[in-house]
Amino acid sequence: MAEDTPIATDAHPGFEFRIEDIGPSRKRLHITVAAERVDEKLQESMGSLQTEAALPGFRKGRVPAHLIQRRFGEGVKQEARNELISKAYQTCLKVHTLQPLGEPESADPDTEIELTQGSDMTFAVDVEVVPEFDIPDVSDITINKPLLEVEDDHIDAELERQCLKNGTGETLEKSFKTGDRMLGAAILTVKGEEDPLFETPRTLVVLPEKGESGAVLGLLFDDLCKSFTRTAVGDTVALATTGPDGHEREDIRGKALELTFTIQVAERITPCSTQDLIDTFSLASEDVLREQIRLALEQQRDEEQAQVLRDQAMNAAVAAVDLDLPERFSEGQIARDLERARMEMLQQGLDPEAVEGKLAEIRERSTAQTIDRMKGYFLIARLVERYEISVSEQELNGSIATMAMRQGVRPDKLRSELAKENRLQQLAMTVRDRKTMDRLAADMQHKDITAEEWRSLQSKA
Image 1 (cartoon, rainbow, N blue to C red):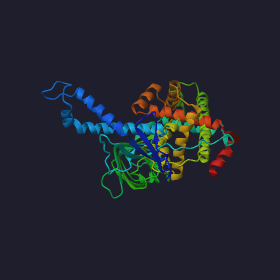
Image 2 (image 1 turned 90 degrees about the horizontal axis):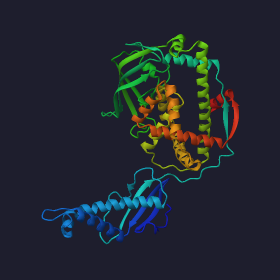
Image 3 (image 1 turned 120 degrees about the vertical axis):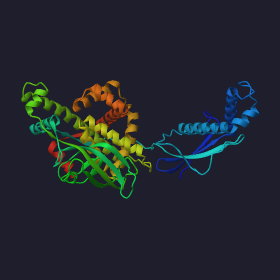
């Protein structure tokens, strides 16, 4: 593995650093703190303590140094050591312009780092860092821009969805079918183990079409509707699946999983009539209602078209970048990726239940797809700096207003919910990333194609 020449910098005297490559985007930091820096820190710590210490028989600040050393010496030494380690580590990152992806790990965990007066302190830590790579030139890349139109059948489908969304619920006891909604207690375990991985007293299950996979606790289960065909409220349904490799929890990936779901409440939504919708929204006629739906769908179409360009731009840029990813994908990185996908879908107007189903599908994606998403994460971070992208409070509020309109809630209520769930920052990052991908797509060549040509390309992908 390549090693850098040791660096001792005048800007940070008393430290010497040597960096060793030990894997893709993984560094070993060899750090030396000079003896004079060690002595200076020990004297500083003892001096501060001598000023503040009070022992029986002595006034504050008048305790002899040898008594302080006897009483507090070991604690002072440990505190000084920890402060020097932290200072040296942060200085090393700054000198070598490294951006860590997680907490450092000791290169030799069985050896304790010692601080001795009059001697250098040396130690080594391993850390994963943001990969170094060149941003590819995308000016010659061509992406397709599908020319999508809102047709009458799109309006009919959205009208049907709105009637269902504004329908009334009928409590069920049995005879469940596609579209029925259930609340119940769920317990997830690894096959053969007693302790559950996760359990919740209330989770929602929406039965998909017959033969299709359905989501429970963010996991996909084959032919979910069939599992509930002959059940009733109070029954416990046993489900099985394999943990997807793209799951944010390492203890779920690749494991044989068993889930039990106890049905507590079930209901079937009866759609309202078109006239009910007209009355609900205080509109003059069905023609006015359909025109309102058309305008909303055109706005959604424009956003979907922009998202198509973003996705193509990112896929093309990721394919062009020469980037070695860190070997250890942390749960936090995958979780952040999923949360970003969640916010993207909510901004596109998907219902929360549909979003959870899509997230379950994302968790099922291949390792190669997960790697590409992670590459995109690092590429966007670099592009944010290149394009100097930022998000204003006005842009954030506009995004919240759009999400609120599509979910049928007040913007102030949605903002409060996002703040309570600590998702405002993630939403701001999502808006930033979308702006960045828009700029990336704008730097590429665009080719207009018909909706039929686009669907044909998608079917071959």
